[in-house]
Length: 74
Image 1 (cartoon, rainbow, N blue to C red):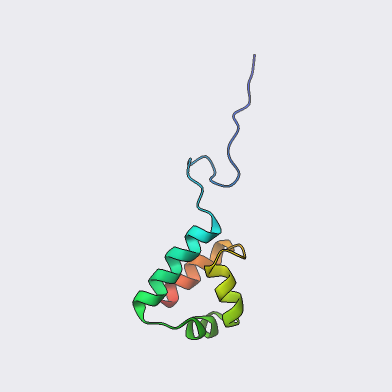
Image 2: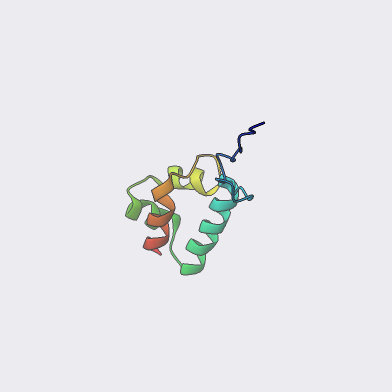
């Protein structure tokens, strides 16, 4: 009998799911260690500081390309 293989849609079968809070904490730490303020980073990304704060605190979901843009700014 055929049994379909189920793949987790969040981790794509990798077995580890990074939630938005975890990603936000990590990226905030990188930003702070680089000496960049939240307001400066938000301006560079074209967002308000409040929106960036929500991302870093895990209140909003990170879009796929945003993480790469964030890291590039550092």
